[in-house]
Length: 476
Ligand code: UDP
Image (cartoon, rainbow, N blue to C red; front, side, top):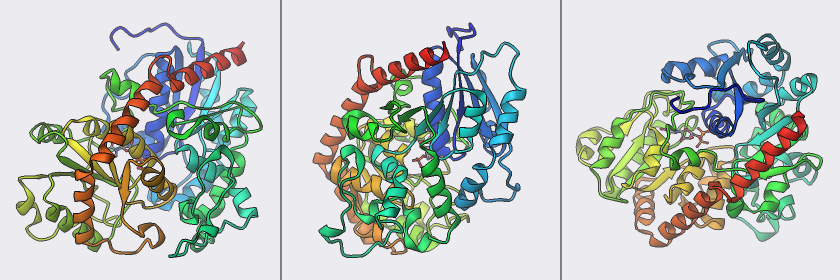
């Protein structure tokens, strides 16, 4: 807090993320950028999320012009939340009145009047709150622009018969979906948001996400966590709701990384910093980082196969093995694995990922292609090996490989979720990734472009300035 401006600012953003780790991280970082540029921030989590953040981040809310609030998500304590995503999204859609009551009852006490509600693209409950409070609703897309377009235009894709998605093993050119707004590259059916696949048609998430896609049009301003040099200005503009401004403002975490400031903002897990000391002892560019984010799970058999593949690759690796990754259970590693690999392996429950990806020893990332992880990797110049699990991850994986040319993948994982990826495949893909100079070169080019975008004068920096200016105008 030293040196911070502690005057109460005149602008006030109420920030409401979707309660999942990647979504909270992205909005927390963007909120920090706004705070640095003169906003007061009210960050509103669900009670469930807030408890997890406070339990793992002891000094969380000690900053000026910032407060945390929370509201009940309406689900019982034993509910799986992100493990039962459809029910969570559908329940949150009804929580507008509860959220509004929390905001109204916490006004006053020197807190400036609310300027805008800045909220995740799947938090439709904030639409009525913004309307009742008479403030603009700013919709934030924490996905890449192409995946955001695939979600926003789900209704259109439904009317054209592309949803429910039929994914076939053989890809024929006539199956490609062309002409989507934003001049985005043509999509394969398997690129679309996986919750719209025909086998999910009766799942709660299918209906809940379609509803959220329609509600995303209830916006006065749209922001996307990507950068124009990666996805183009047209793709960002295509997310506009009824002609409102729609701007790329990412990567939102990058300014803090570049300034060497604390990047641990909204973690729901205890980060194990000891992996950084281990990384210090490794050769530059030699370590494979392995993490599948906060939600993805794998079968016990698949984890064993992966472990043996990592061992066989001969590469040093840092592996995030979440305690619930084995389909909700504690994973069991192959017999003798930890002893056999102890000189070149480090296994943790959760890392400070931004610091890991920024570390000079890390040369590749085996990832589930969550958008935050992918963007973090791209921005740090680390090539990716994609192993998507659900949602937008299939599109992001394919774009990283075919469009941005910064990644590899495992053949056909996207069209057959239950296929076992063998140890031999892991071994050879890890070697391909770590030895591929072309990918490394491309990753460094994208890193430079991302840094340029967030620096003064860069595309994202300028777009954030435009957004702030427009909010000031509206607040007058
Ligand atoms: N993350 C982290 N430590 C870990 C694993 C992940 O800090 O050990 C962070 C990561 O930096 C990213 C977020 O958790 O910001 C995961 O978001 P992403 O969109 O990649 O995946 P999700 O968890 O939503 O599937």
